[in-house]
Length: 161
Image 1 (cartoon, rainbow, N blue to C red):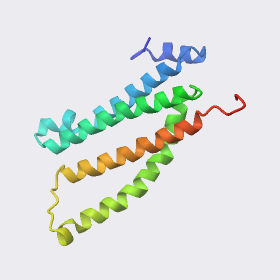
Image 2 (image 1 turned 90 degrees about the horizontal axis):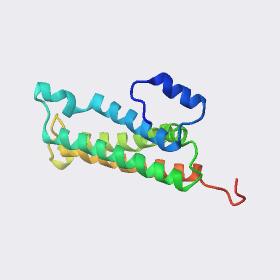
Image 3 (image 1 turned 120 degrees about the vertical axis):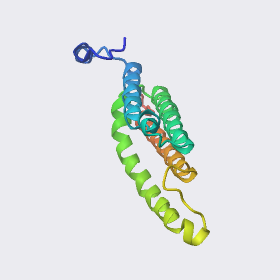
């Protein structure tokens, strides 16, 4: 049973070690989706009528990558030793995020700095197809790398340990 509000009951279940890997995956998914909702242009910017279709596309992209990425990583972990999914996900996600930013920020900066003077492409100030492109590339790298690292972490050694 998932406890949305009753944190003490959940804490007691953790204390008794009765929370399954599947449940921890659900809690991780719910946590990340609530984080997404708190930053979503669709959720907040519609009040000010500043959302364009590219902002909406970005929100949908984030939602889909979050859902499918977590499920992919969960299935990979389950196919391995099926242990410590949330710990692995949260800890490995940090260096993967740093890698993704280290790769993507210079490329994105170079593109935006050179788009108009070199390519004659005017970059809109609000959400655009370029923002969606870089967001998508970032998420593809992020979940590809994270899933690969979770596969390594959950690998069962040849001696059965």
